[in-house]
Amino acid sequence: MRADLELGCVRCGARYPLSFHQRRCPACLEAGAHASLLLRYAAPPGGTLPPRAAPSGDGLWRWDAFLPLRREAAVTLAEGGTPLLPAEALGLGPLLVKDETRNPTGSFKDRLASVAVSAARALGHRVIAAASSGNAGAAAAAYAARAGLPCVVFTMADAAGPMLAQIVAYGAHLVRLAHAPDRFRLLSAGVTRHGWFATSPAEAPITGSSPFGVEGCKTLAYEIAEAMEWRVPDWVLVPVCYGDALTGLARGFAELRAIGWTDRVPRLVAAETSGSLVAALAEGAAMPPARPRNAPGIAPSIGAAQGTVQALQALRETDGLAVAIDDEALGEWHLRAARRLGLYLEPASVAPLAALARLRAEGIIAPDATVVALATATGLKDTARTMRLAPEASGPVLDMADPDAALAAVARRLEAAA
Image: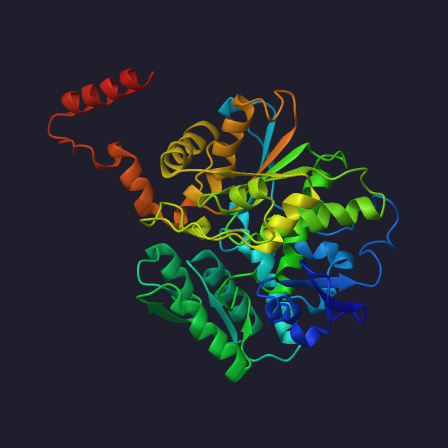
């Protein structure tokens, strides 16, 4: 662990020792606010490297000069180093998709889990734990297994089957709960009573995941900038629940500018479902308001009813925007991304595409502006939703006793789709 680390509040700036890494800001709590603590470095990370001398090697841990631990201490499954794919076929103008489905458990949460579990082991914690709708739990379980540590994952009763299968396959102790808020109550009790290390948010109202894990998300910014030859995109669009990836991107791009590797930061866009961040920006609020939905949506990965201060701060620091996306748009872009790009993404992952379509149409994002959309997780995490969105999945079963009729039926489908 680096020696020059402390924690700082994203809201009030109060500083704390690393021993507070599983707590919200005490000063803000006294004022009735809920804000996360993030790592603070004595000097800009990466500042000792030669200008634009991207480290050698592969994956996330090649960027260890920017991280709280060195690669020798890493718990890794070769996460990171994901491709930046051209996506003009979507008809949304200049667009690149950062494809995080290539990570070991199929989501960007592997970046978070790798750094968080590495920190947990370095700090002497003996149990990894998470409260999750699925992706964060699968990542925590995988990296705990890699580290040789037990893992407890609290999730909802209706969590997607493939994600539950991942969690139990990695040997984690899976606890399904009838009421989603109980996940955080139990996790918080495990942290305070038994010293578990929470990779995910551990208390409600939610403020964000492990500050060590958020550092892992910074590497998204480094990889995007390097792939674009240090020319920063105009915009980066991100699916947002609690804002860990959004915060990591804001921090990563700010660090690159601070050490002179880039000359600016991109404007960030939070694609959410609740509209909490939209309201906070419109009202100039210090805290995002709660905007509960009447029924569960098709994108539980970004289903939070209330945004976080860290997400709001990331948007304000980058002159960013928030866009609320409904289920109809998510379903449409879920299939469109697969059929036009060959990218099978979970519904939450296409929220940036739906947001970009709206922002281009409204003239907020210029037709020639360079854009990166973060695709956070694979559609294989929840195939049942695809089956419900694609009616052809339940089409007729053809009888090969009459091959001519079967081929004629296929030909009619091809003609109809042309």
